[in-house]
Picture (cartoon, rainbow, N blue to C red):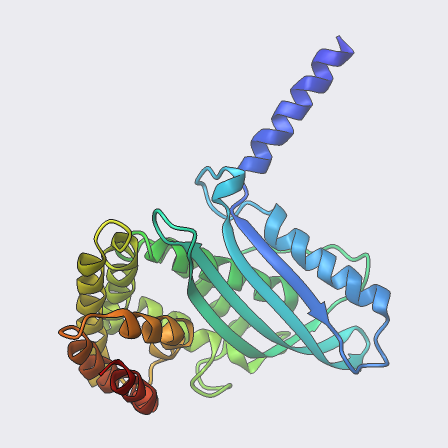
Length: 304
């Protein structure tokens, strides 16, 4: 009898373990800060990891090998006392390309506006319908951005439900009198804010950006294993959508985010393109990424 009950709970635990979506690698550093207790920093890292990886974020079923690979590196820049910390977060997300062992970066953003309270042994409470704490709001925001971005790479605007959840977190934090970071606000932290990123993602003016993101991955990279030329054509088509967005709004945060993740990959694609396709790629990339024109031209010259 006891053995049967034990087996039941093992099976039940395995079932719930399959439902978790994120495989988030978390690192917390406090290099150069002599005021921070190493045990507290380690505890912070463990609590963040549990929050990201043990929580169920969607209603979809995930097997262990299907979990979404992401990374959060938190560099503590100031221990302000009274459990208040300031930090910079480097966030990234990747997924495998179909039929290959290549991981393509989907999202790669550095957030320099983390200000939060953390006390060891306190619960990490979170409610997506109200602002409960700065730290859990930050983590949940990035969890939903990761998931929304991942889903957008597989279906047109497939991540919308999760971006809406991230927007709710932004609005709750922005309306709270106890939030610490100006990056929750429309104008408080410059153009590169969490508020502006989610506004861009959900704004119909930039639908072409999300269409390009889907096209780039599903009709571009994912087809390269079976037909590299068809895959390259899909990537070129995605750049057409990007070009239209760039003409109307060249400095949107979503455009900056896309090239933060994709510039190195596009350089490799340009290097491997045929001589007839290189000029097309170069023209489009030079238009929508003028800061990299010299790099693109050098690649063309080496190929001649």
